[in-house]
Length: 295
Image (cartoon, rainbow, N blue to C red):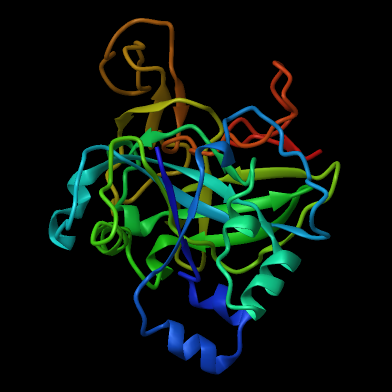
């Protein structure tokens, strides 16, 4: 398995690290690719241990895709066939070391690919999202405070373009991961910090305002009751979330099946399940996110 990652794929993130001239240059170049290693992976439920070889380690919240079939020189129009699952992850970066390497025009492996630098959540099938992969909202909270908020529509290079570009140089194989870039809001982590990653599941609009709804339960979307774009009445069930094969009943509609009842929810659960404290018990956080303790 190999891990590829894209640097500087959101204009706002480039702006917080680079000059305006550098921003304009990067907006008109190919994707910036770098690599991580299999030892970089932190599986869901495992902690991130702060290394001692740099002074500052930053979080970078990203959408991560998993390659589903072997491909080389993939056409962008067929790239969507080469991945089925995605999740939310964190690209931990030794920022002060990266600044030194960049100043010397040296590669980034030591600041980006070190052991434990790639946290990933539980993967979900893109068909379960209920939206296009270029229409995903995601955000990250640090110690209960919103730090990063992104939308895949704001990517400079789309996921399909990234796959096509990367496959010019590397044969993509089943199980390979691609980190697709981080939005603005990066910052340092320290011992004891708790990170929560949540994916807003859909937005609703009234005559005067709009807001996003987050999942309150973990699981799979068993039924979308109200299609996108239709009017929703107060208290109306929008979707049913539960375990695959679980029986459910929608209030006001003929019973689909008997109990055990699945949880009525607005939409699909978040993909993120990053960095908890390594213990078996669930953190006392919203059920659609995972509070993760950084050591």
